[in-house]
Image (tube, rainbow, N blue to C red; front, side):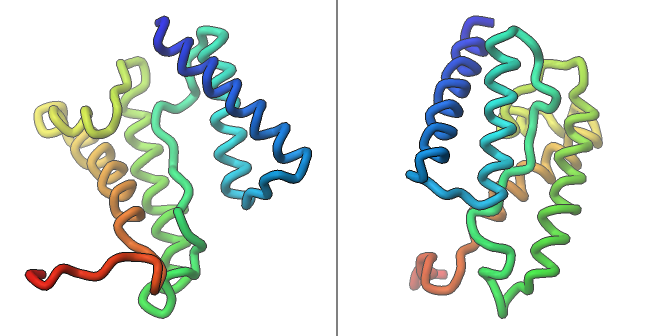
Amino acid sequence: MAPRRFRGAATLVVGCLLVCCLERGFVSPTNATRRSLAAGFASGLAGVLGLESAQAYDLPDLPYAYDALEPSIDKATMEFHHDKHHLTYVTNINKAMEGKTQPPLVELQKTAIKDGAAFRNSGGGAYNHNFFWLEMAPTGKGGKPSEKL
């Protein structure tokens, strides 16, 4: 319980610092970042109070705009894939984990096959999509494939 409280307290402090910076105009986040800040603040407060977070796994924000991968992947496809498809995996793994210890998604994968379809499909889908978004980048922002590839 002590590590959870420490993590919650740290999140609360960082959240307060970010709110102060926002008010002074030092940072100007997008709406998605503000949503993440609010979720982190609520999670930190729940941790400090010793309460469980409402959901163990969250839908991460995309590290780029929905239309940043055009023309390869259009904005509508990205919105659907992230906001509906990936969110379904996150929602379903949270339902499957209710009342259970909620490990990091990478740890969950180690026993997902023996734990059943909800863990394999939803946990695996959430984990794979978290990785998927990070592996893509707008033109000029990513690396180049290796010669061997």
